[in-house]
Amino acid sequence: MEDSAPIEDLKKKAIIEALLFVAGEPVTLDSIIKATEMQKPEVKQMADELIAEYRAKNSGILIAEIAEGYQMVTNPDFAVCVKKFKNINQTARLSQPALETLAIIAYRQPITRLEIDQFRGVNSDGAVKSLLEKRLIKIVGKKETPGRPFLYGTTKEFLQYFGLKNLSDLPPINDFLKDEAA
Image (cartoon, rainbow, N blue to C red; front, side):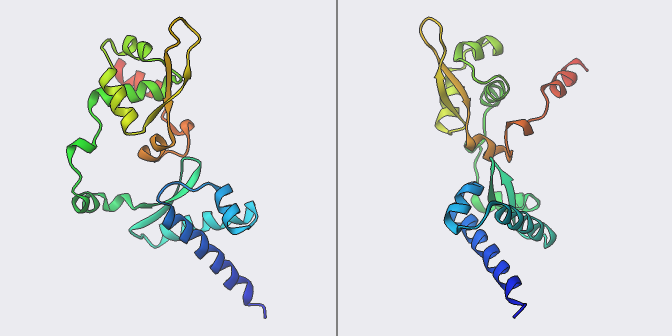
C-alpha cells in the first residue's frame, strides 16, 4: 500500500500543528522531538512545510520561527481587527523611556542600570522595573565591580514580543546611527 506514507506524513504534521497550537509560546525542535519521538531532520522539514502551507493559504494564523522555536501567530495582515477584538489599551504598549531602555539593553547586554542611566542621561529605574515586570528583560548576573550591580539582558519573551528568531535578527545599530546623522 504505497499511499500510507503521505497519510503518515499528514498525521505527523497534524501532531506538530497540535503541539504548536496548545503551547501558546515558541516550541523548540527538541521539545517536539521529545513529544513525538520523530527525528530532527523530519521535524524541521515538516515544520518548514507547515510554515509554507499556512503562508500559501493566507490564513488568519501563521506558523513562524520565533525565539529559536516555532509558534502559531496571528497573521499581521489582520492585526487591526485582532487589536479591536482584544481591546488592547495603551497601557499594554511600551513607553518611550521603556523602549529606549530596552533598545540599550538589547544592543549592549549584559549591562548594569548605572550604565543604562549614563547612556540615556536620565534615571532608568522606572523603565527597568516595568521591563522586568513585562518579562522583556531579566537579571543575567552581577558585575564584578564594587557593589556587584545586577547585569540585565533580554529574554525569550523579548524575542517573542518583537517577532525575532534570535538577537542576530536585530537591525544593525549602524542603521540607527545613520538616521541620526541625517
